Length: 438
Image (cartoon, rainbow, N blue to C red; front, top):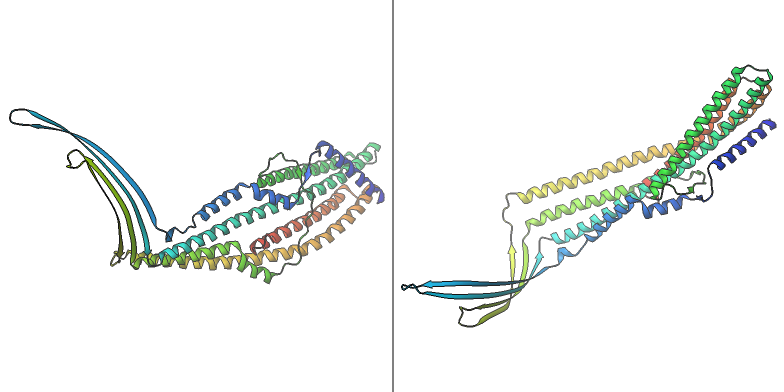
């Protein structure tokens, strides 16, 4: 048994050296999850686009509903009229008349009262800003979720590559032993040929998993928005948390979940739309003021020119009497929209609780599976080690040895999957509870 263990370690080290020689490691730099997230938040296109949309929403929050509008205008006109008068003797009186006019004005219009619509409009702007901030946070959270999932998936694939590399080493030892027996005539050619088939099968699996690892890094680089030729590698392990409590997660989810908070802001916007619609039933009071300056010059006037200037102001009161039930229609529709917003929020709360409970059950089950599969892997490893000794002594057939080999592979693969699924469930629970950035 000691001899077989030494052979496996020696072959595994030789194979690892050959892999590193085939793939130069100079210039590679190890990167952590925190560095990946930091880079993605700075350069990911989805985050940048969402941030720009949030900036537009911020720009839309103004005091314009309360402020007057002021316009300044100026008009210059000039005309020349050629006038010809014919008398009875046929004589023509040709007169050229030139007229110049200048009009300058400044006007102010200010709505003093509109049924409190201006206050509701201002509050609506603030709620829309809150929705924009929640939407931006949701984009960031989902990016962190995808990035973390990809990060741990790469770790899981790398562990599978290491496992398959070990499996190939064992298959290579088996093939070498079978070939030696065949060469000395103690065995038929069937056994070493079968061993070669298994070796090729394991090598094919290893190659496919290495390809998956390369594609995993490409997806990670895409999320980080860095060149696909970046020389970055991950050296990390998957360590799940074991202190998550369902009641605490549910409480935080109902209070801090980003999607729920966005829907709450949307409900408040719908309520403000009702107030805006109702304000149309109230009178409106407008103040207008202005200053005008007129200058006129014409050759037909007794004087060479005249000008005038002066201020004007006024109040305008408008009382709605009947609008074909249009105001009532808008109020009813706004009320229905608000009711739908409340129902959407309640449905989202129900869906969130159901999904959180399901994922928490998956998280707990995978936590138990990790310990269970670790025991299975250790037992399968000891069985495989014993099977290698028996196979070397010739007391175990190649097919039976393959069963031990696949049993060890399956047990190890199940543990890796349980670790990955536990970590993904854990990240998802933090996302749903609104505490992904704690």
